[in-house]
Amino acid sequence: MGKGASGAGVEWSSSMLTLYVVLAIGILVIVGLAVIFARMRKIRKECRETIAKRYNSQDIVCHDNLANYLGLEIFKGKQSRGKGVLLLAQDELYFFRLHPVMELCIPLKRIIRIVTPTKFLNISSPTPLLQVNFKQEDGTSNSVAWKIGDVTSFTQSLKLQRKKVQPRRKK
Image: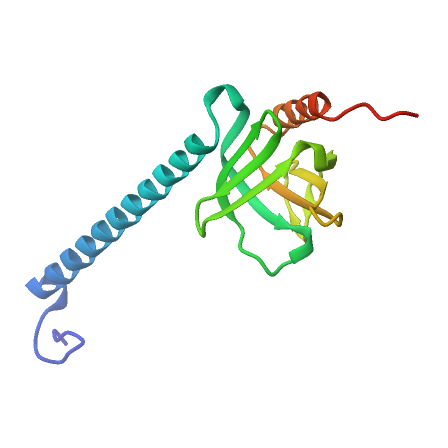
């Protein structure tokens, strides 16, 4: 047979056209990755600047730079999930989602309960999640969850910090 797919008598396996196509695809992939990495670098820089404006280093109790936001319970499944920075400060729990950009700030005084389930909003995980139940400004209950690296340590820090800011209840 000897003819390529075009029927023009070109041997595709040995032609210069194949080399050019493979080279062009390779260049497009490299340029695409460079653009993605540059954009992610810019987003992370904006995140660091936002956090630096909001907190000084003494205010930060602990943080997780790769927290995976699973959503707020009131919005059910109609929301964007994504990675960001989860930060525990002296008097609040703060989350900054990288893309699309979103900020969530929960004063520690409004936190009702801290649990570590393996399922939240129909999303299952083989490892425990950090779920925080809290009261919103209008008094309604809500909850949020993240998948983070060290759930145990973060949960302990959050519970200890919460005890520091919440007054003891009288019986």
